[in-house]
Image (cartoon, rainbow, N blue to C red):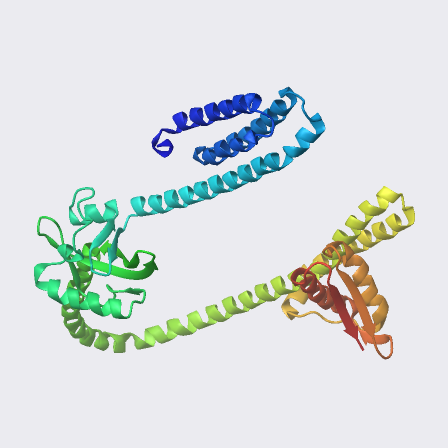
Length: 432
């Protein structure tokens, strides 16, 4: 009877029960374990909607149990009486957390049900749920509107009510075959399926089926889409193809006439083609020149910009420690990077170098260890937390190469290593 009452009445009843148990606990003779009666109220609080109300009830029952122990005639020491009530208090809180978990699970199920209901109710496609016998268990509003039925009119009917009479027996065979080997599939693909509305109007549909198993048995979810517009579009395309076939014959005749004119204009077109080819060659050369310029700029600008960015970050760190020597060193490195950018700009603005289309290397004897260490220092500020760079070198330290070009290559490779390696990883550079 309690479960049939409204939520406010259940809540009032529970609080009244707690009050009655408290009064009974006060007047009951010593030795009567009245405090465990509070558990009844705590278990009945599963009807609460808010978990905070259950916690409040657990706190109040705990407080009332202690008050009742204090107000009872002191036949035994108060400490002993309170100690004897500890199991009951522990039971209160165990019951409270059980009820809270139950309320949370109930709320989670309610939210899932609401989400499913919203998806089912507001879907733009028709959705039917049928059992193994082909009886409609559920139908969403879109399906009812699609077939012209009122709300709640479809459930309970066989799904064949939605299929034209001359196709019903064929559909029953398809349905039985599907249940013998149920697999998700789109039945509308490649098939000319028909549906029928309540007033007897036939229309083309596409249907996809998804079987699933529940405790009540085997079910199938059918997603139904009105295929009228697509069929109309296909018919329009077919008509257009037929019209195009007629035009093709006319074009064939015109083509024969044009062939004669083509012969007459061949010489004129040949001359125009030669002029156009010359223009295209110039345009292609210009495009290749632009492409080489962008490629050189993207590589050569990256090195000094990376150096400037790294040194700027390190200057900020050294400024906090007032490390003037390191600040000067990295300020000089920024100055060198800017000068390098200026040099690159000057070279890019040189028409002669643009026409060459490639970079001339400047060879010199370089210490590989020093070159790689210099790159390491410039890129320290780009490393992720915990990333470190190690350099393993074999053989002679001196190499005859263009250090700037090598720096470009290594900065590209190490930047990729930093980007695609996780934190706390080791990036290794091997040289020989």
